[in-house]
Length: 140
Image (cartoon, rainbow, N blue to C red; front, side):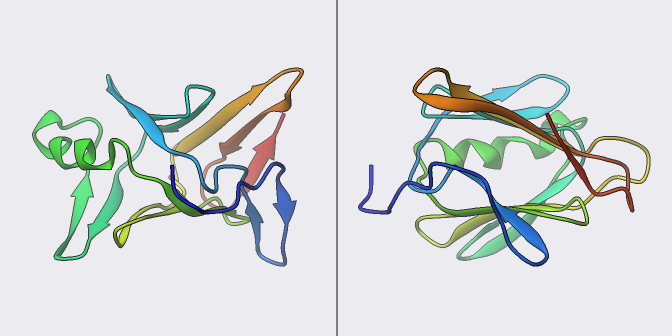
């Protein structure tokens, strides 16, 4: 774990929501028909649509439906999230240590991503879903 402050709640800014993932570590990377990052064993970031992962020396397009593109996501195992936000337009950005990042845009045909988590009663449970392009995000 790094010295980054943990953000305990979702905070609304002008054009995005700051997510409660700051300072936390990716401790599992799961692949099925999507890519799921498990954060500190309590929160999940499920990516159902193509997304980009940037490393200091390259940026790659990852398509969860194409297994041959997914392997580089394994490099995010044990990465610490420095910043995480959901755009009100339905985009999602995760900034990690070591100059790595992940970005996914809204999908015109469905839900591009969803985040769920919390550990009641210690931290409140939450779920955020990116709605189809132009529809923004939904909280539950």
